[in-house]
Length: 116
Length: 112
Image (cartoon, rainbow over the protein chains, first blue to last red):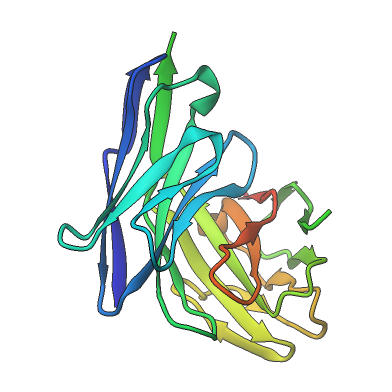
């Protein structure tokens, strides 16, 4: 069984401030972890993913996330928020395994508001 | 361009009137899935398909049907829609390896 908890359904930051969106996961096997972004009236777009190897992963638009096994966390950060970052962000987990397809479980999402 | 195409984008229908939401992908992906998105609940999986003629229930399959007669297409069928199926629906496909889903643009369904 696997699950994802995103802390905070709404987060507001000032333009230029640090963005921190929190995600904790539960998985009985080593996980694959993902962050997706959803802009208004659009589908979800993959921001970044962790599968194996380096625990700090970099994604598009200056975002990065760090896999911390001991804390079962995969928080998303960006040093300086832009107005264009305003969107909803989803953390997701799947069971990591070579080959085959594993179910992806999504968190409930965090809406990021960027204040000018 | 690699993409997942859903139609229609918006649909308003009446209770009990059968409808189909189409989904097509051009990436030769074997795995496809349907999700519904509701405020505060995130994305919940309705059905998925591992390959042609292979489909299985997700977390919230009640009231929905799917078929996978060809690799590229994965339609979602609501035989008798009800108001509690008013939602935003996404089709997604997944290729081999952990590359993450490619999502369609969504279908906003309202059942009155």
